[in-house]
Structures are given as C-alpha cells and as structure tokens.
Length: 250
Image 1 (cartoon, one colour):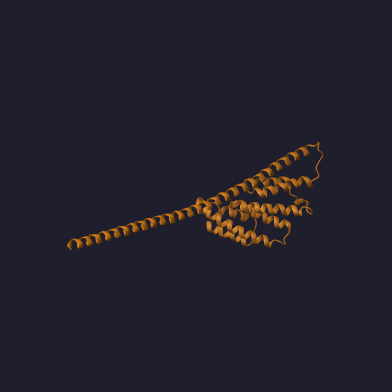
Image 2 (tube, rainbow, N blue to C red):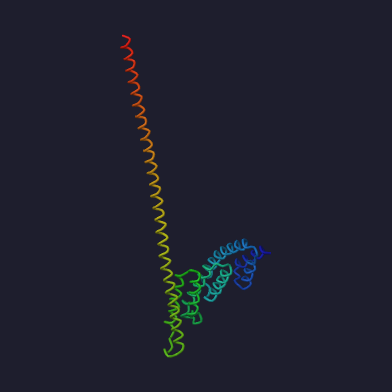
C-alpha cells in the first residue's frame, strides 16, 4: 500500500541504504491520482529528506571522496524526484566543488567546463542567479588551468566559442542579480512610501477629528452664550414690566 511504501522509504533512509532500490521506492510513493494528497506527500518527503541529508552529510565527513560523492548523488536524485530544485542544486554544487578541490591529486575528479555550464544553465532556469554566476566563473577557470592547443586548430575555435557562451551566460546572471537588486530596492521604497502615507493619513484624520470636535464644541459654547444672553434679556424685560406695573398702581 501507499503508507507501507512510505514507511519503507523512511526505513531505507534511516538505515543508510542509498541505492537504486530506495530511489525506486521513492518514485512509487509519488504515484498518486489525488493531486492534494500528492502535494502533501511531496511536502512531507521534502522536509524529511532535507533533515536526513544534513545528518548524513555530517556523519560521512571522514569517508572517502568517492563515498561522499555517491551519497551526494543519491540525494541529488531524491530531491529532483520530489521537486525540491533548491536542495537539488545546492548538493550538485557541493559535489562539483568537492571534486574540483580534490582534482589536484585525483585527475578523474576534474570537473569539465561542460559540467559547470550545464549546472549554471539549470541554476539560472531555477532563478538562482548568484550561484549560476559562480558556476560560470568556475567554467572559465577550466580554460585557464588546461593547456590550450594551438590557435590554428579546430579545438581552439571550439573552446573560444564555449568561452563566449559562458561569458554571455555570466553577464546575464550578473544583470539579473542587479535587476533583482533594483526591484527589491523599488519594492522596499514603495513599501516605505505606503507606510509613510498611512501614517500621514492617520495623522490627518486624527487632526481632522480633533478639529471637528473643537469646531462642534465652539458651536455649542456659542449657542450657550446666546442662550444665556437671551435669558438675561428676558429677565431684564420681566423686571421692567414689573416696575412699570408698580408705578402704574401708585
């Protein structure tokens, strides 16, 4: 059943069985016609794989380069299957850097410019422009480290074309980073302006409210004064009428 396959996959990872069988079990877990349940399973598996991969990478620190690379390759495939492109690219990059560092003593570990270029293209497609730029720099370093053939040969022309392509890709990545930076700054500016406007509007409304209250209080005070004046006039008139009546009786 679906749950038994999921439990089996968890067991395979916990017991550190990073092989093709485990990959096949993972693929079978994700076979579902229910979109909602599929999304939930993907999310659960992604969280599980991220947690386990960190633990595993720490525990294999003393292993050989080949053993480390096999584990990294397994998790790269697993993350690709569950659709976690960020983790997939991160571990691919880690594996490439590891090979590059160890290639001085082990020629078979050398990373070709094609591998860096392929990684850079995938990183760009996924929106990771900064890491794509670094991959392009590493790809260009491959041409500096390798002994270039004579300029007259076809190989030189081929390499020159590849260098131009990598530089174009790097320029695009750098432009995208700058553009992204401008967009972020613009978004922050607009957010700040909205906040300031909100505060200003609130202040204006508060002042308007205070002014309105003050105005209404002023009207009330004026009306009271008029009422008091009117009452005073009435009292004076009443007193005059009384005095006139007294004089007439005399």
